[in-house]
Image 1: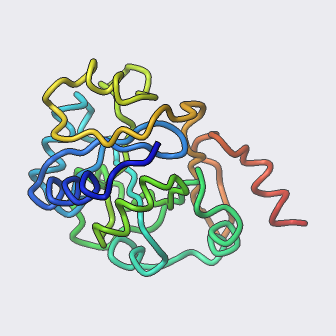
Image 2 (image 1 turned 60 degrees about the horizontal axis):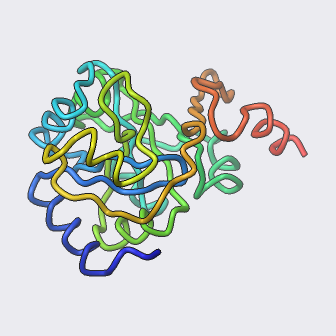
Length: 202
């Protein structure tokens, strides 16, 4: 199935107005808000029942949008981005000063990835700006794999759901950071960290 263009346009309107949109990614459904809007982020945390010190990952459309979020791209990230983006690998960058603390969890870093899911890609293209993509679930519950699961879990707390069928719902994205010039695994996920390292050595 394909989400109609009108629904994508409505999702963009909702995000720009400070609302919460659920949309499919290559792992599970995510909850999208404007990552630069403190009020939207506060609502996102309230909807999820999420601890305020847990950072929120962000999707970008392309390399240029990283500059709105991060001060630099660590050199070890470049081959990972070339080989695994778009894909379920989230890279943790040094955050730009002034980003909302709710976004970074006051860590000084921000997690970023590109999604290969057609619906997510269309939404990012139309929006023209980064978008949060924290998993669509109440804190502690399993991430939603379908639009029906989102509606059952959140009801009207989510303003709009882009229904594009079931997502794989397997593992979350692999979380990768950089320390002392070396890649480090912060969370194992859909792509094993060992496979990432092996691909870069080959």
